[in-house]
Image 1: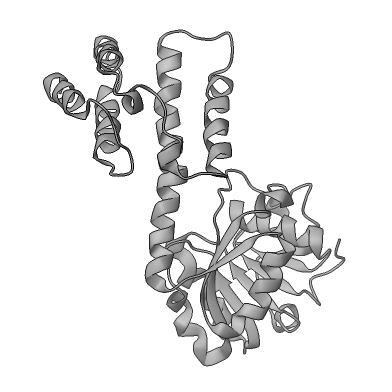
Image 2 (image 1 turned 30 degrees about the vertical axis):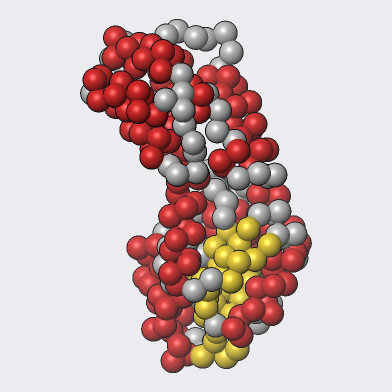
Length: 290
């Protein structure tokens, strides 16, 4: 743990879920090396995982002189605003990365007059809470797009996290982020629909998340060893028109969200990776019930 704000190796701009989780990871592997820059007053920002001297709401030359790397972890719309204070300091050969999944490294081009090397480093992971355990940043995939000069540091960081690195161009980076939204955010939304169905029918003996978790875990474990075309199961995969009809009628009868059920079924039928039997009959069923 640190005992002051001088002599830091890493600056984290942003005190949200990603920034604080990154701090905890860095403080575990490089104790006393990281400083968080946030907007709150020092007396309003605290955590059992944070040493008081590791947080500041302002910067001066003494804080930045020893920095090896700067991580910008604020939401996409605030990256330029949050990093603008870096214009006050010459960056020499320092590595400066934002951690947005969708924005390119060029978002930081306006800082280049101050020196330094720039990039975008994105963890393919979700951070639903602040100060998550260091393991949350380990054994995952990181993507990097930006200056080649950043790579020695980036490889060292990823190696410390026991993770793998994807080197991408701008187009690939955006495509990866879109895929991640499908695999994480949209899946969470679909699980919320599933929870609503359980709640509406009064199933309470076991908490709704515990009912669904084994299904999700099974898919995640299967994905470690296979691609999605080998993982699909259920009535659509079997071409079970009768079961699908019962599902749709149940959802309509109970005024539940049958439109999303229809849309997702259509998506499976239209996916060339899935060879669905009785697809024509299922399409007719969907049209009839829409």
